[in-house]
Image 1 (cartoon, rainbow, N blue to C red):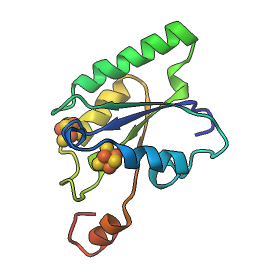
Image 2 (tube, protein in one colour):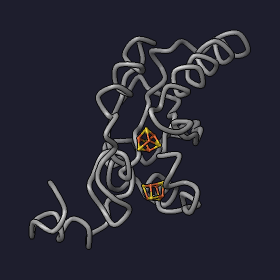
Image 3 (cartoon, helix red, strand yellow):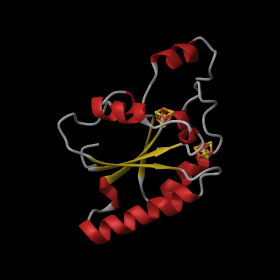
Length: 137
Ligand code: SF4
Ligand code: SF4
């Protein structure tokens, strides 16, 4: 994570119809869950966006736009950007099973030459339910 300055946090478009994304932001602010490996002292730039809706193909255009604009405006190379996929995409939870298009989304991101990480907010209750077999691991 040392060479990363810019985090593009991608959230499930369907879940975001009823979620503010507060717990993702809180996890980043506190450097917990999927953000635990990010330095607490570094002032990262962040961008919150959704996949655009199933099957997630709009994400390719959104991230492509980011890569081109941030390079043109600020000279930021894509190697300094990391894409962070929200826990409601990566894990079975109260919101439903993990995204059925996760592999496809990762392929779209890889084609742009961007690095990707999984998870944002990790709910202790959901973790317990996954361990108990109520949600899939
Ligand atoms: S991980 Fe949680 S807080 Fe973040 S977008 Fe998904 S449901 Fe909302
Ligand atoms: S493609 Fe996955 S992340 Fe995007 S809206 Fe559909 S289920 Fe959610």
